[in-house]
Length: 403
Ligand SMILES: NC(=O)c1ccc[n+]([C@@H]2O[C@H](COP(=O)([O-])OP(=O)(O)OC[C@H]3O[C@@H](n4cnc5c(N)ncnc54)[C@H](O)[C@@H]3O)[C@@H](O)[C@H]2O)c1
Ligand SMILES: [Fe+2]
Image 1 (cartoon, protein in one colour):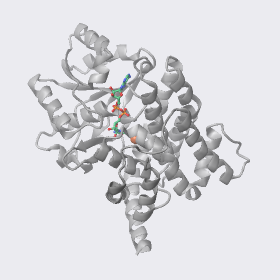
Image 2 (tube, rainbow, N blue to C red; image 1 turned 120 degrees about the vertical axis):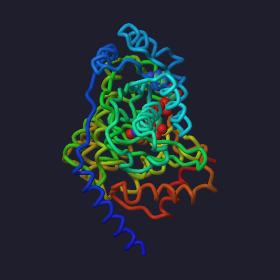
Image 3 (tube, rainbow, N blue to C red; image 1 turned 90 degrees about the vertical axis):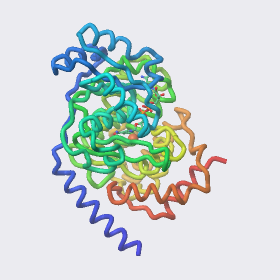
């Protein structure tokens, strides 16, 4: 039975991968480097946009991170309404509130300013504005956004989700306690600003968890079956930077050059995973996010080594290569040694950045359901190197229990 199921999952996955591989995915035009945010008002002006909605969250506005931009937009004659009600793991209600504010203020453009939560929320607000007949739940899944959308300007403040260049947006549905994805090439932002000056004040625990999210994007895309030379190149650049700079930035976040490197690493990882997809780490993490609100990056960081243990033998060569690229081995060492060392390195990074080995919110009674939902999310659309049964997923989840 399992063999038959496996065969069908693999066939469907191959088919989706074939279609994805032929899709012409846009990439955002970049404004990059410390201070690059200052160039955004002129860019928006050149698109004849007069009245923007800036989508963010209260953590960011509370720190005054949007103030200089709002002022500069005003000076450029562009009105700006700040909508900062986005929650972490943004909800359908957050999106609908943003749509209302956009309409009430007769906005004609959107700036997504923040981590993955405001960026994903802004991407779906944009889709709702572009296609008002489509409710958020109508957009759930792949390819449901009917056509092109007005340009969206993304300003990531974490490094990160890569949402500024990805075709996806994750939305939480508090009614079903599920977190679901909306995926469409039309969701890819038209412009992205990678400005490390915005990230200097990112607290250490968010620096570490969002950095490990980016590492997970790079690794899952690299070991998956849809990886291409293009995605591998980006994933490798991301891994090299993250292994070199993340822990140092966790200890001292004030080095702008390192912060800029990490912003770029997150972007590279985004370019890789939006084409080559993610895997079981994300499938489990999304469901922990939906059920308990566990921060996405933290969940990924905790789960990553367990999933790599599970599939190591099926992606030994790729993990070995990442160990060499990450500077923790030489390419004449056996792949078994190198791949095992890479996983150990992930564990060591977690330890050094005070990331736990389990998920405190996880309840044993939820494990069966969580495993079902995670596998339903992963099969067939995540091209994982080794397929997982319900019992194997439950066993991994049990390892995450904290007593
Ligand atoms: N669309 C995609 O491709 C994609 C990929 C990965 C994750 N995601 C989604 O992104 C969300 C997570 O995003 P995230 O990890 O960036 O976190 P987040 O956007 O939820 O932000 C986490 C916290 O960090 C704070 N913060 C953000 N930037 C800051 C800064 N510069 N200084 C100080 N505080 C700052 C915020 O106020 C917030 O409290 C999840 O919903 C996840 O599912 C989306
Ligand atoms: Fe992620």
